[in-house]
Amino acid sequence: MKKMAIITSYFDGESYGLLGPQMAATVIQENTPFECIVIAVTHSDDKAVLTKALFGYFGKEMPIVGFSSLNGREDIFLFAKALKAEGAITFLAGPQSDVDFLGETGWRDYPHRFRGFSEAFSFALQGPAEQVFPVLEGISNGQWKNASGLLYTDDDCRIVQTPRQSWKNKFLRRVRWNNLYRVGQTGLENLTIISGQVIQHIGCPHAAQAKPVELVYPYHLDSKGEKRIRLKLKGCSFCDVSSDKGFHGALDLDTVLSQIACLPEDAEGRTISFELINENALPGLHRLIQESSGRGMSLSQIKLTLRADWFLSNENHLREALHLARKLRIRILLSSIGFESFDDRILRNLNKGLTVKTNIDAILLMRRLKKEFPLQWAYSNRDGAIHGLIHPTPWDSPETDSHIQQITASCHIHLDILPAHSVPLIIHHASGLADWIREIETSEEICFERYVSVIGWWNEALLKM
Ligand code: SF4
Image 1 (spheres, rainbow, N blue to C red):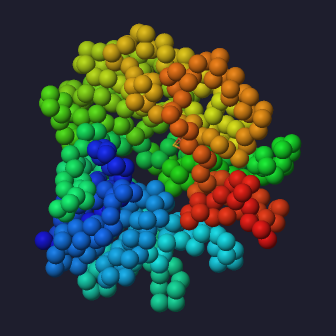
Image 2 (cartoon, rainbow, N blue to C red):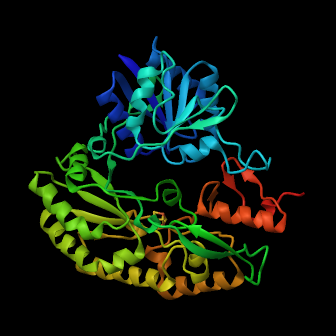
């Protein structure tokens, strides 16, 4: 059998499933003559051992290696480049693969901008995994360049890009959750997962439409907050999902239930815990639980990632789902709400589309529900939830710090809401905030340093001209 592998970024000591790469490997294995596995690579993995394991897996077959969900890991990009130099066919896929292959807008005119990863990969593939079928079919005779969603460098060193297809439900129904491997002392070792993911929304409804916004300068460049940049943004200004996918709509319930049916069972014969990928999951949650039970599935835990405003406006739907969850002994864990900040000025610049009051009201509701449904409802950091908090940001000031401290003290959010570590604001070169910072660079005739595909926004990142 011909062989392919997908390499993806992972964390040490974990055992969670990776929906995107594992579903892609399933689609390839079930629809082409290729066996396809996913190899999860952590920071501590020895790349020489990985190379040996990889070539052991391919044997005499031509190595074809996809790279997906790399989270900006430079060590894996360098590994891909070395693999390509050794004669492997390497390609970049998954979220942001097109823009990461192409490089930052205007990089040929501005040498400090990110040049892209086109040298590290034979090509990139953006969009649904099934677009790779004609590539795999034609790779041995060079007849693969007409496939959809493809980016490659032509003989004149120009990047050619073909239009991508949209997602088809029939390829979103199945995941072989046993195709995930880690590199061990003796080669590739199968990893048993204890939690998975199920996709219900492709993209995010908050990113459905571009809207005009005004964002202020970083505090270190304009402490009075008078200078503004006008932009059109889809969704939150920092978000990868919004810039990569926008919103492609919801999958039908039958497709979602088919994915749930693929999840392995735990020792008690119940479906392992899974994260439902849908920022507005509450309106359909009762029906999803009811139908899965009707099809004989015994769910253990559903993890939700929601927006605070949609959580509040769908309280009745959630209560309905919690009553049914009580009957069926299912736990609903609100594993993440992207609060992002407890200062309105910062929330406005993040284009979050909600206020501190909404965030506080959501916290109060989460706590009330815990009293009413102590066994079915979980939301706190002690339950394993990691709520979104972005700090530091370019707009931090003594005033915003003081607001956040007041809320922390008065609402005791350190007890159940705040994560162990906040996440600094990261500006990916293709996000909404990247347009903002490039506008500032042009207006002020300054340059911020690039850290591979990330743009620095802090004072120390200013380059001397
Ligand atoms: S951060 Fe969340 S709510 Fe905002 S656009 Fe991204 S997915 Fe949607």
